[in-house]
Image (cartoon, rainbow, N blue to C red; front, side, top):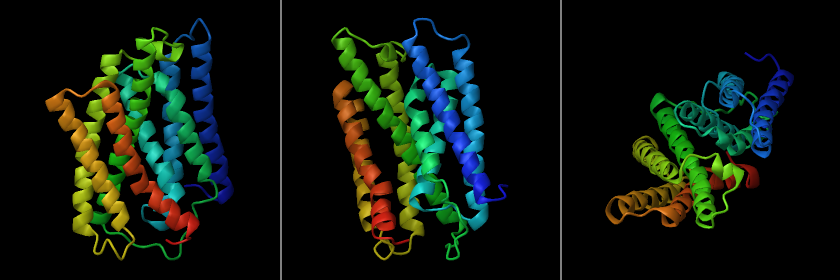
Length: 274
């Protein structure tokens, strides 16, 4: 494991650099008329290296406190690690490597924001396995629904540009509109499934959501669940698609973002509470 804070910071910088270089490499290939040979293999192999380094950074933080670190920047880094892993796995079966232009810079920023952050906390709270299961389910559901939000952005741009018959090079390198739409609903369905279990385990394992400053977080998470559930209901029974699906995805994700990071940002970075 990493021997010092200097080692951690150096490895963080290297990880972020790989993310940025791959994203820049993708941008340059979109600009050029002729693409680099084996582009897909280069992106996936570079992503694998970055993921391994990113995971090592978070494992170091876990080893220091023997618990999933729950501060704002550590959680942000963990969420984008999961997002990057899910993106990379999906890229093995779907031609979506172009989305690295969006995913990788955000992952790099999340890593850089965590520089100097992982130190041994004397008052770290010991969490039992059940509560850590709740945290893992929450992270997975949030990560999947973040991917859905990214997809909704691209789906919206793709639909508008195709409608105006002026698709950009980026849009031309995305999967067909129908495939993007199907992927969106698949990701939302899986994210909602995990969010359901995250909420259920939260009600079971959290002793007092009001005493733990979690009332607002719970309310916003339930609101997000209702929005995403309504979206899937509308898709199944009313045939919702296109911009209507995009807007409902935005609404659900905005509520979930406030639940996961809005309250944590206010409590830890503004009010300086744990």
